[in-house]
Structure formats: structure tokens, C-alpha cells
Length: 421
Image (cartoon, rainbow, N blue to C red; front, side):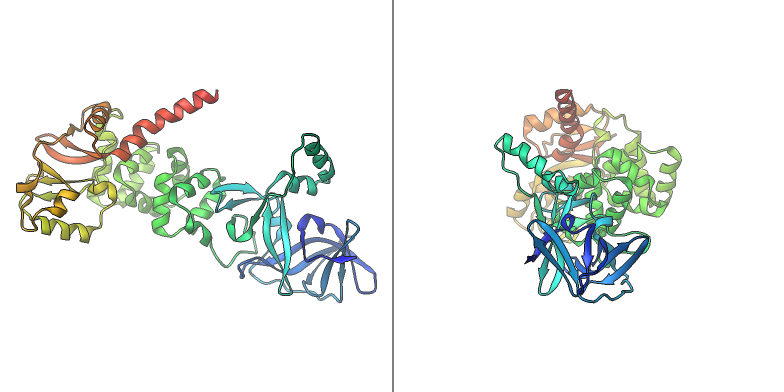
């Protein structure tokens, strides 16, 4: 009989447990772990004998392999008062979804690998493959035979615990002491894809665990339908906070999917100018440039110098898409010219913008068809295009990101759906 240093949870669940005298004390039906360490550490095990269920401290328990049969022995048992930060492996992890941080996707837990580390048993990996599932339902040999027929190698699909984030970390009484720290390592676009695949309760749980900046960046990447569903579950103040931190064109798109009374409730909490800008964007025909332009743009007065402009940019710290080009206006906010960031940096510091700007500007009106902006961007190889209203007043910009997201992405999605059909 060989002592096991590591084993799958499925190999010990519902197995008989014997004391040091060889007496049967019950079946092991689950294991409690604490999340306070890097790897979940076993602190108690649940035993069932007849109708009685008892929790024992996870000490002096050993696991053996006897010609393919798992034997569990314990020397002395001691009841335990469960700690606050603990949860059950079988109940809270098996058949539940977890996030594969490296694979950047949701996966289902079919089994757990447990190992003895420095005298303590810890969860070291999760198994998400077909072999793990077949092992749990007693069909492992059948599945192996099927694979052998087709000359395919069958292996466990293991993901190390430090590469996953569990979603099922709580029930009515038990809750983890730490939030989803590993999620902060993911790019917002990858995190958005994962959140879209979750059910409503998981979405809420995970989203609320993110810090403010990551939450906003991730929310921007989530598709419009899921965004709307998530907003419906938030308080009015939280909705307003999220909407306020989004680019105004995206905020308008989200609000356009919501009921009128909900929109008014959100906008009433926001500052006057922001609410006014969003209302205006919502009123544009969806085929016009005004409907996809970004109101969060930066423009500088014609009379300031290159050095002053650069100092202001350092202070403002704009996003990349806001400084593809520097747009220049007069006191009436009329568009007068533009200059690339490169040209701005290499020109004389004392030079005024009006003397170094390019006055021949490619631009569109807010009422022009979106196709006009697309054609100009392609023809002149532009990263952004200024949008004007009325008497040449700069009212927004359309970046190449906006064109890709609002024009090309929907077309690609439709083609993919048609191809799938």
C-alpha cells in the first residue's frame, strides 16, 4: 500500500474513512479549504455516517493507493468550529465555472488536483478536461478505450491554481477574504469577453470586485446588449458613475438602449454639460457622423505657443486617440487648423499654433453620412477626422477606433453570423 502525495478530489470523495483501529467512521463527502494562502489549504473534512454529518479537523489523515483502490486513514478525530473564510471543494468548485487567466476564458471545473506541500494538503490545480469528467462519473475506462480505438492520446487538462480565479467563492455563510486580484492582470478587452460569457450573478460579483479604472475600461469593451443588462442591475448613482466615466459617444449608445425614464434618472444625476452633450449625441440620426463622433476631444487656441501646448498636454494626459492630431480653434470655437503631435514637438517652442498649423483640413459635418467619414479616412490615411456644426464650430472628432468599432465591426459580425448559418 503506497501513500499518496497527490491525488484527484474525485478519487477520495464518497470513499470510506477508517480510524487507527481499522474501524469505519464514515464516508468523506467534502473538504473545507481556506483561501488565505496562495493555494487553497485543507482545514477540515466532512464525514457522513448514516444520517449524521460531522466536520473534523484536517489533521493526521492520510491517503493510500492499494492496487488502484483509494484507502483513507485517520489517527484520532477532532471536531472543528469552521473558520469564517472557508468553503467546500466539491460543493463550491466542482461543476462550477472558473476563469483561466492565461487562456483568458471561462472553463468548467471537472476535478481538482490536491497535493501535500510541507505537511499540508492544498489544491494545486484544476482539471477541465473530458478525462476528469469521465473519472467522476465512473466512465474513465470506457473513454480511454474509445480514444485508443482512434489512436488518440488522452491526458488530463490541468491548469495550475495560480493561473485561475474562482467565481464560486461564497455562499450564505462563507466568503473569501480576498477579491479577484488575478483579474487585474487581464487586458480589459479579454476581461470583457469573459464577463460576457458569465451569468448575471457572476457578472455583478466580478465587476464589483474591479477597481474603478479597470471597471470603466472593461465596461467600454463589453458589447452593448450586455452593457444594458448590467446597468439595469446597478443603483442610479452607480449607473451615473459608470456613464460619466465612459466616452460620451459610447455612453449615448448605451443609454439609447434603455427606457426613457431610466435615461432621465441617470442624466439627472450627472453634471449639466455632460448630460447636455450625451442628450445631443442621442438625438443624431444613427447614420450620421454626429452619432459616432466623440465629444471628449482636445482643442487649443490659435494664439498659444507650441511650448504652452506641450505643457498643457503633459498636464491633461490625454488618451492616445485624443491626440492623433492637435486641433486648433479661435475664441468662437471655430476650427482653424490642425497639427500632428510630431510636428508640434519638433517646431520652435516659441512658435504660435496659428503660424505652424495646417489650415487645409479634411473635415465632415455632424449631419454628413457616416460613409463620408469612412471614405475620407481611407483616402487620406487619417487617424481621426474633426466634426463641425453650424459656422465651422468644432463639435467632436471621429477616430479610426470609432470607425472600426461602429462601422466595420458590425459588418464583420453579420458576415460571421451568415457564414455560421
